[in-house]
Length: 389
Ligand SMILES: *Cc1c(COP(=O)(O)O)cnc(C)c1O
Image (tube, rainbow, N blue to C red):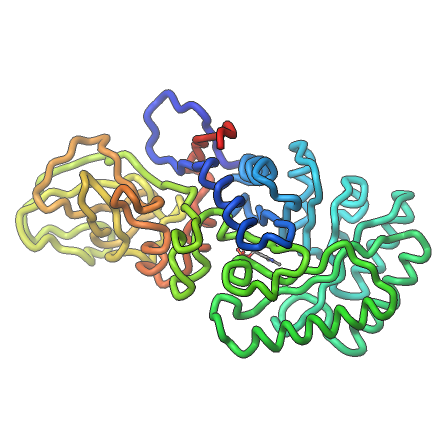
């Protein structure tokens, strides 16, 4: 279980500070960018590492009408924590907790006949209808129902189940493959196919409450994709889906997570001293080394060995040698900050610290992976929990 702390009294080895005021402001900025659509706060995977329940609460306070998760377990956990409003989850496997989801008034996604069969059986057992959203594969090639015969079969069977009072078809939806690459030809093709699949279903008599396809990149760059609802994940946490689209500030977004650690040791070493496993870094001359007590078990990517940036004592330093399981070292170039000095791995960037995007580039990945993988051993410390603006 992820540790959380609201009022840390003891100094912490490491902390991921989550600025809920920034998150609420991000919700408002995103709603202003998609004024005609409702907003779904995607809080799957523990809100991309930020903590599902506090982030979901803050998002709802700021005007998110929907919460979205991948798994039904994640959705049920939100309800168990008392979160109101519409909740949707989309990653089902056979034998999943359909009845629990129905009883918790959760919208479930159905991409194929096996799932429709399971949800209608569960609705019979529950004695009430299920809220079902039919997912179309408009070109992502992942989950979702293929257009053509498959879609016709699924829509037909769903309409019969609706007529029998077992389900209510609350949504028709899809997901983009390349929305983070504006102008990619697949975007227009997916939109065209989505409109065709909507027209088919609506022509057969489906009356969805919401039609939706936009993730964060489409919410930021593609107004014609907003439809009735936008599903924003990464942008909610103040991170740009990709640097090509722009920086967070270009959209009025601010990163919510700041990851820092207390320097555990500073020491003088001679030149020619190997540093960390494998000795991939050797001190070029007499210098000081700082020990940063977080490692790959905390989600610091080992791929950022030799490249990851850290702000210590007002200066950017670079991971020297390998990131180990629990710690890594930086070359402080002779500086002697006291043990306990804060090392900021990433944050919004306005105190001169690196951002999650900088770590993504250092590790050859995307910022989504950097924040989502911050481990459960790092306490989340919430600030600006009270809604003051
Ligand atoms: C994760 C996810 C989202 C959110 O994507 P972002 O790019 O983080 O906004 C939206 N829809 C689905 C189906 C997802 O799985």
